[in-house]
Image 1 (cartoon, rainbow, N blue to C red):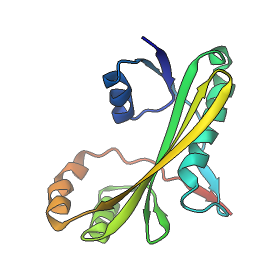
Image 2 (cartoon, one colour):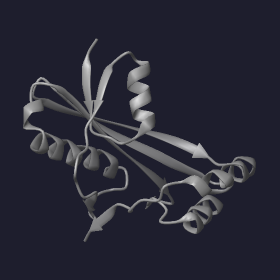
Image 3 (cartoon, rainbow, N blue to C red):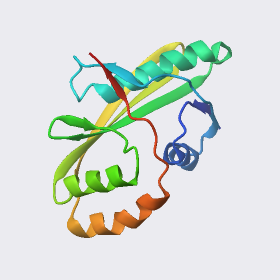
Length: 153
């Protein structure tokens, strides 16, 4: 089995790798998720995944001969990145904005292996229907709200 260092606190990313039979060790990376305002919304997730990889390689120099994965996901609506909601009310407002609308979810992944970083990205179009919005609302009461990504102007 292959050992992968996952620089992500996402339980879902961890589960995906474990289900693919990788041995995974989660590492914490301290990096400000700040991106230049000149980037297209479709470049931000990849940029932040690479930024996290740079930080991981600096913070964990002993892992230079290992495999490391970093990732970032953004939600895009009307050509704008929707940040993480700061509180329950902002989460509710975001769901109501997306209710009955199509938005995009873009994930950028950086993989460090054999002293080389490869960056991948994928985009999914999502349609949030009324039923799903009403079903999701109660779950936001238990959501842990975090700082949004920042834009450098």
